[in-house]
Length: 243
Image (cartoon, helix red, strand yellow):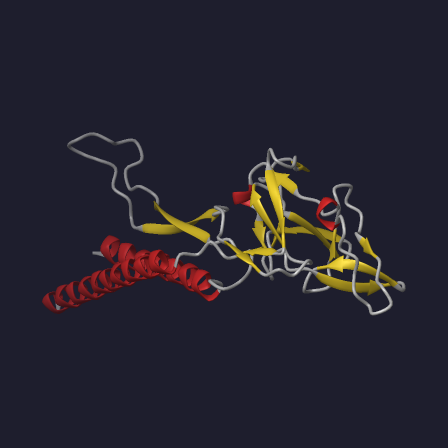
């Protein structure tokens, strides 16, 4: 019964990972620009590697959770009428520069930051928003400290990543490119995307879908726990018979 015990234990770990993923998505349901992460499952190592017939099909020893990447489906746009808010409709992401590194986000809730006595367009964490040439976007302020937002929508850079689902999640709805994401290029307005000023993109997390997934994961977790318990009870009975 060891294989049943191992299969049940593997199922417990896999479903715990799934529930952690669902919990993270639910926790960010109100996070602007957040993209939900996906988890799938695959068989663990087969006991008989070269057998796969109707009489003797491949049989695995449990399951494990695997990362299916980031779901970049469009979130619902919300009107704010604040001229430093931007929402991307279509493909692409904003580029943010901070601590010498560039990351990407769909969170267009921007503000004003000061550096070397100059005002720049920044995100909520103080990172500099970049234009299409990956330069900081400098702003001019009037005597009351109000930024001049005329033409700002044309200065904000939007970048298209070849495989955005493979990006590495960071904090604050930011994502980093890696070897699997492919090329990064400047987006073409009206072809790749449209940029809306005075609007924000909400998280693409559907509460009903996530709750359904959570119930399924909980039931699978309970079943895996029952498998472990049953396998342990059988082992105890076998040991008692031997005694």
